[in-house]
Length: 259
Length: 376
Ligand code: SF4
Ligand code: SF4
Ligand code: SF4
Ligand code: SF4
Ligand code: SF4
Image 1 (cartoon, rainbow over the protein chains, first blue to last red):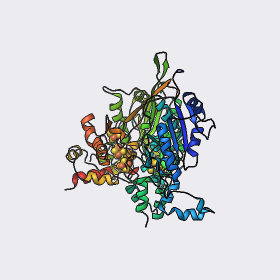
Image 2 (cartoon, each protein chain N blue to C red; image 1 turned 90 degrees about the vertical axis):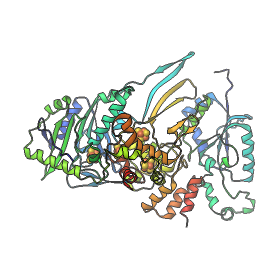
Image 3 (tube, helix red, strand yellow; image 1 turned 60 degrees about the horizontal axis):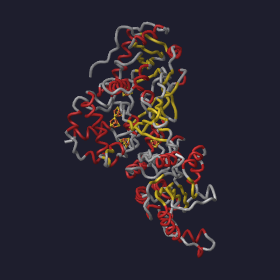
Image 4 (tube, each protein chain N blue to C red; image 1 turned 45 degrees about the vertical axis):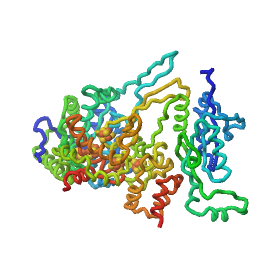
C-alpha cells in the first residue's frame, strides 16, 4: 500500500458550532488509523499545517449565512473531488435557520451593539442549495461511526452502509420500549433518519429529529397523532422547528401548525 | 368455535409457592432463563433468575398505538399477555456477524463466528408466539435453505408456555387458530389459576424433556374441579377477543383487492417506520451488508433485521421498485395474509396483535383487512 499516494482530506467550516468537527477528533482510536490512510490536509481545528488543494474528500460543516460564505463554498467545490456535508447545519441550514421564519434584521438589531457592521444573508441555507453535494452525513452532531464508515467506504471504493430509514428501526433493534406507545411521549423517530442509534428513546425521551427527515417522512400523519396525544399546536411547531427546521418536510409541517 | 380442553393424562398441579422450584430445576440443568419483566413501563423479555423478577400483579392494557401497565390486587405472575417485542431476538438476533475476513498475501482468510451454544429456557411463551416459532422453524431450519445459527440456537431451547386466561386488548389468535391455549411446540404449558385466593398452575408436559423436568418438581394430581375451572377460563379467553380475521378466506379475498383505493387511504396514515415488522414474531427479513475497515485489511459480512417498509428493501439494479408507501404497506399486509400462504402453506400472521399496539399511529391490521374485504 505504501507506494499508493494517500488521499487528501480537508475539513471546512461555515456557520456552525464546531460540534461535528469535534466528532472527527472524538474518533480517538480510529483517528490514528484515519491519519495513516489519508493525509489530513486542511483541518484547522486539529492542526495548523495546511496542505494545498485539490482535495480528494472535503467535509463541510455549517450553513451559508453570509455573502462571503456563499462565494467561498464555490471555491471549495472547485478544489474538491468529493464534497460531503456533515451535520444538520450543512445539510439543512441548522438551528440558525430559525431566522428563515422571521426577518433577520429584527434579530440583528437586538443582538448586536453595532448592527451596521453586520453583513448577513436573510436566510441560513444548506450547502446543497449552493453547490453539488456528493454525500450527506446527517445529525446534530454527526455520528462518528457513520463518519468512519463513510471514510472507510470511500478509501476502499465501496458504497457506505448508511441507511435512510427511520429511527424506529434502530430503536426496536436495540430492544427499546417505544416511549410514544407506552407513555404517550411525542417522538419524531418515525419521520427521522436513522444514525444516532435511537439515543433519546433509549433514555426515555422522544426523538428530537437531529438526523432530519427520513426517506419517506409522513409528518402529517405523525403530527395528527401528536394532536391526539394532546400536544398543543405551539409545541408541534417547536418540535418540527429544531436543528432541521428548514429541511422541507419539517418546515412544511411546522408551518401547517402555525396559526 | 371448538371447545378448548386440557388432556386427561399427565397433567399435574404446581402450587405457586413451588414455582421457584421450576426455575431452579431449569437453571440446574444448565439453562439460561429468559422471561417477562417490567422495564420502561412495558413487558420485555430478559434474563431472569427468581420468580419475583416476573411482572407480579401487573396487567397490560393494549389498544391501537397505546400500551399501559396497571397494577392489580391479584398477585398473578403472568397476568400480562405478550411482551412488547417477540422472542425472535433470541433465536434470530437483530444484528449478527455472518463472517469476517482478513487479507492474507494475495488472498484472504475467512473467520467464522463461534456458534452460539447457550441453552436457553423461554419462560412464559404464549400460544401465538409458539405458532410463530413453528413458522420460523419451517422457514429457517427446514427445507432447502437452512439458517444454521438459528438451527443451533433452536436446538438448545426449552419452552415453558403459558396459556392465556385473559386475552390482551389487541389479540386475535382465536380467529387465526393459534391460541389462546398452546397445543404443540412446548416442553411445558402452564395455566395460571387464581381462584378464591388459591394460586396454582396446571402443568401440561409437551415433550420428554418436559416430563423429565416435572418429575423433579413437587407436583400433585389435579382435582377434576381444577381442570374444569381452567378449561372454563381458557374458553372465556377465546371468546373474549374483540378482533378477528376470517383466516380461512382472507387470502383469496385480499388477493382480489390489489388495486383497491383503500390502500392509498392507509398510506396517508402509515409512517413507513417499520415498527410493525420489527415487533412481529414471524417477520424474518434481513439485510446483508459487507464492510471493510479503514485499512482495507479486514472485512466483515453483517446481517440485520430489515423491513419491507424501507425504500432500500426493494432496491434492485437501477432503483427501488416500491417507492410509494401504498405499495410498501400493501406488500406487508399481503405478505402476512396472502403470499405467505403461497410461499409456505401457512398464514404469516398469528394474531398476536403487536403490530396494532406498537404502531405509533395505531394502524390495525384486522380493521384494515376488514375495510378492504368486507366493504361493498
Ligand atoms: S420511541 Fe420513538 S423512535 Fe422509538 S419506536 Fe417509538 S416512535 Fe420510534
Ligand atoms: S394473541 Fe392469544 S396467545 Fe397471544 S397473547 Fe393474545 S391471547 Fe395470548
Ligand atoms: S403500519 Fe404503523 S408500524 Fe407499520 S410502518 Fe405503518 S405506521 Fe409504522
Ligand atoms: S402481523 Fe401483527 S398480529 Fe400478525 S403476527 Fe405479526 S405482529 Fe402479530
Ligand atoms: S416482507 Fe415484510 S412482512 Fe414479510 S417477512 Fe419481510 S419484513 Fe415481514
